[in-house]
Amino acid sequence: MSVRFAKHSISLLGIGHALPPQGVDNAQLLAALAALTNPRLKRKAQTIANLIGVQHRYLSRRLDKAASGAEPNGIELSLTAIARMRQHAGFDTLEPCQYLISHTCTPHTQVPGNAAWIADALAFSAPYLELRQACCGFANGLQIAAAMIAADSAPIVISGSETGSVYSQFTSDFLDTDQLLNLMQMGDGAGAVMLGPWQAGVSFLSDMYLGHQGIGQSPGFYLAGGSDSVWQGQISRFHHNANAVRSMGPTLFELGLAAVLSRGYQLDDFAYILPHQANGHIDTLLSQHWQIAPERIINDAVELGNLGSAAIWVSLSRLIHSGRLRHNDKVLVLGAEATKYIYGGCVYHHCDSESQSTT
Image 1 (cartoon, rainbow, N blue to C red):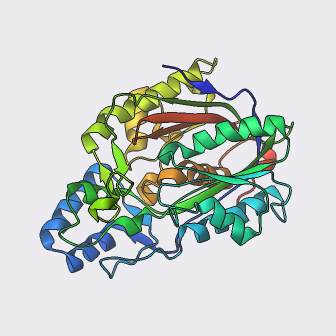
Image 2: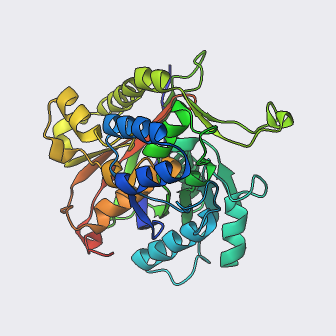
Image 3: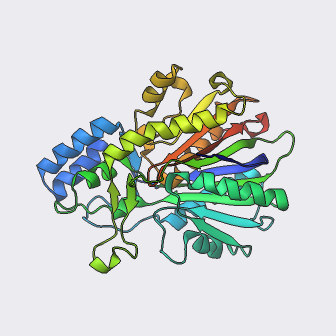
């Protein structure tokens, strides 16, 4: 087992996030299920909701139809997040940036990727690429960005988005236990960050790490519809092995924590710990396990659901713009993804100049 640490720290020049305008609590979602399917599915979904602790989320899909397109779609959400990121960074355009990296599991089109659509909408003429590492897409993006910024000091933009709600079909045939779990757990949204070379007086990311524990393991979460199954004529759908995720998930957080502590940190060094937002009980579970105050564990999942690729950027953006951070506060970011069990993250170092509160 090996963990890759980026060699260079990088400045966080700006960060922003965007959520669909439609906020949906559990009562509204359960009412939609009852109207479009049957009372049995509603009761089953209620039981799942109680277990995972997500009480609210923002969705791009409609609730009055069995199937729905994404409004706003992933490109529109990403553009809003990037606009807010630029405002935070004080950049009028992305022209000074050398690269655009996007990551998602629910692309606007399979090919071209979201990065191409975003670049086109922004008239961004520099190169771009897209990653498909689910909830740790941000961590892979950081590895790439840190190396590129060390070679060329021009900024890099990373954007993560998900609009997975449109993959749910509100029909009795479609909504088995796995699909109900996805429906009650996930949310839609996008986040974006602008990164540059380290400089004094600017918030920065250090100790960026990446590893995996997936060799020989069956995926805990995967999206069907690739070349191994598209010939069967089934619609693309996410499959969720809850038992595998429950077994491997805590291990990924432990591996990430061990990686960062091996660099000389202690848990008490961090004002906040930002884990991947897997469920609405994340603060209680981790605070009990690590014997620390639950207030130090960021829990956005209870309000936003699991945002997949967008989760870390959205939660970090919300924290930075909340005004809660003080000068020199450190935030431990612990990413974990269940497709093939990647773990990755970083340490965020806050500078007072970034503490202004925005919407």
